[in-house]
Image (cartoon, rainbow, N blue to C red; front, side, top):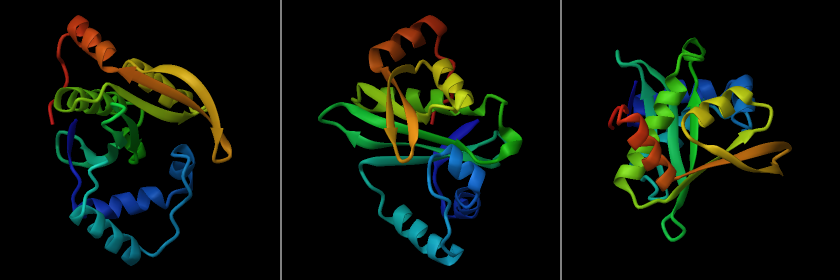
Length: 176
C-alpha cells in the first residue's frame, strides 16, 4: 500500500465514492448529488489551491490502483492537533488490512514530519469495523458526542503513545 498526493485523475473515483449512498452513510456525510462537471471544477480548484490546514492523500495498491483516500485536517498547530479521516472506497479491498496500513502510514508521516502532538477522529458509534481498525493503529476512545443526527465515538492518539508503540513494534511502516 502506498499513500501519494492527490491528482486530478482521482476525481472520477472520488465522485463515484461520494455519490454512493452506502459509502456516504459510513462517512456520515450527505450523498453527493451535483453533476460531475461541477464536482471536477471544484476538485481542480482545490488541488490548485491547497489549504495549509488540510493534507489529502490517495491510497493505492502496490500495483497503482487507487482504492481510497485519507487525510489529516483541522490542523491546529497552536493546540498541536489535527483530525484524521479515511475511506476505502473500493469495496473489493475491504477487510484486507488496507485501512490499518493507510492509517499507520499516515500517523507515521504526521508524527515524523510535523510538531503535532495529538491526532483524533470521529467514527460512528455503530461502525465497529472502523473502530477496530483505529484501535489496531493505537487510537483509544475518549468520549462520545452526538452531532449530525448520529452518535460518534471520538478516538485519539498522542505522539508519545505513537513513539512508544513504534519502539516496541519496530518501524514497519511504509514511508510517504
